[in-house]
Image (cartoon, rainbow, N blue to C red; front, side):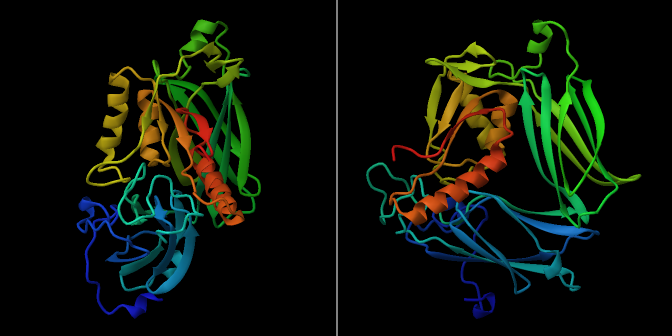
Length: 371
C-alpha cells in the first residue's frame, strides 16, 4: 500500500498515544495489525538538515515524506531517527505518513506483556499498537553530533567519551571541545581533533588526594551527583553544533553474594515496575508522570526498580539519574523460540543498550525474563 491509496482519513488520533488507549481519542482495544498516520505541518525554517525522531513505533514502521518513501524501522521498543531533508519541497508545508504494522498474533517478536488474545488473559496486558512514544522534529547543521557515549572509570579517576558525527562529514579541520563541571566548578576542559568522523578519548580528572573529596563526586540514590558536560563541534572559528549532556562517577560490581555500589556493599530494595497507566497504557501521560513515579518509589523507601518486560521512555531514566533511583532495564520477551525470534531480540536489544548505556541509574541489563 501507498499513502496515495487513501482519499480520506476517517479517524483522528492524539499522538503519541496508542489507539487502544482512551487518551488517543480512539480507545479501541481490538486488533490493529495496520495503523496509518498522516500529518501535514509548516516546514520549519532555517538552514541545515531536518531530522524526524520517533521514540518508538510498535512493531514495524514505514515512513513517507511528501509521498516519497524515506525508510523503515523494525522493533517496537527502540528509537530511530530519519534525515528527511532530501524529501522536502518549496511549498512551505511538509506531509509525513507512517504505516505501522503490528501483527497481534506474532509470538516470535519481542512483545513483553502485550496479549495476543482479543481480551487480556492471565498475566498479560492490553496491546499497544503503532506510535506510542513521542515524535518530534529537529533542525541541525550540515554536520552535527550524531551520538555520544560516556564511560566513567572510578579506579583510574577518569571519564571516557565517544562522539560520532553525522551529516556531511568533513575530511579534516574539525574539533570537539569538552567541558566537564560539577557544583559550579570546572573539572576539565579540553579540545580534540576529530578524525574519520569520530573521536574516542579519556579525560583524566584532577586527583583530590583524599577519598572524602572523591566521594563528593560519586553518584548514588542517596546522593545523585551528576557531572554536567558541554560538547561543542568547531570548524576553525565556526560553531557547527553544541550538545548539553551529563555523566556520573559510579561503579557496579559483584563480590561473592554481594551487590557493590561504588566499591561498597549495597542492599537493593526494588519494586517491580510495570510502567502502565490506566488511560494511556504503555505511554506515560506526560513528563511529570514519569518524575512522579520516581518520587513515589523513593518516598516509599525503595532505592530502585526493575522495569518489568518493558523498555521505558528515556525520560524515565533521566529522572532516575537526576533524583537517584537504581534501574534494572529489561528486554520484553518473545513467546516462541525460533531463529527469527533470536535475530529480532538480539538486534533490538543491541539498539537499546547503545541508546541507554550512559545512564548512571541503570545497574543491570536483563536480556530475557523467565524464558
